[in-house]
Length: 64
Image (tube, rainbow, N blue to C red; front, side, top):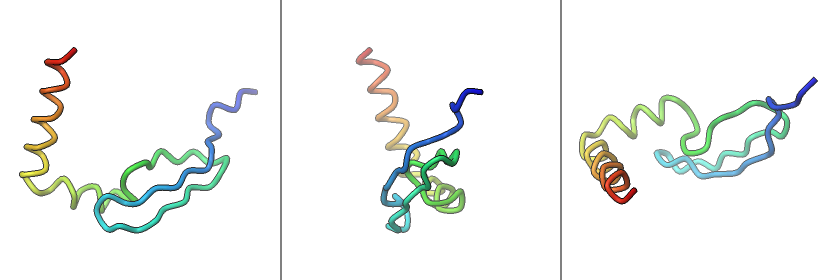
């Protein structure tokens, strides 16, 4: 049996609310930037952030 679903413990600060998040070792938890889906939606709701992200993403594609 493979253990691909097991993850290491991670710590990060939520980009929206600033809450410190610590993931548990051994559990599949893909969060790396936001503490919840709600924070993610609230962060990306603002069109200026979407525009900044798109601009940055387009610049990275042009550099490749």
